Length: 198
Image 1 (cartoon, helix red, strand yellow):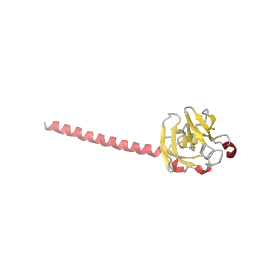
Image 2 (cartoon, one colour):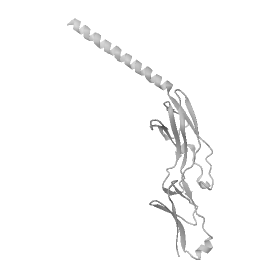
Image 3 (cartoon, helix red, strand yellow):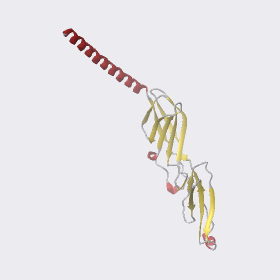
Image 4 (cartoon, rainbow, N blue to C red):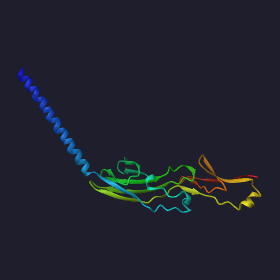
């Protein structure tokens, strides 16, 4: 009976040793993975130019902290990061990535709603190295603004008037006394209709 107790105790002690060795190996392996992992250091170029052809100056430029980042592995199509802009290092496994920075929601059609985008493809991250990426962002949706004829002359014919901008099932009005512009997704078909009441 004592021999059996001793045998079971030895097996129990061996199991503890094996468990501890397994934990130590797992810990070493985790340290090893962490030490060879690379990453990204992303900066957004300050050259986001605001001109009358891209976006009204009164809307101003978006600040860097308002941008979103998406980092996608080109081989697996898995996102290594998808969230708010970070100025520090973003960890990532070795591989080739597409890095995209965006600001805004890119609506089908909206008033004074510019969408900024910048993208770099084929960005390589190596084991244990940090890859610096500089992205230049520009207005990526289309803009439509209207210059109306002289208001005095138009008032002789129309009580009120405007231009309707239509994209798919969405529409908005550009009126003569407003400085607003219509923004719509690039590549979409857009229609303009002059409307008024006499």
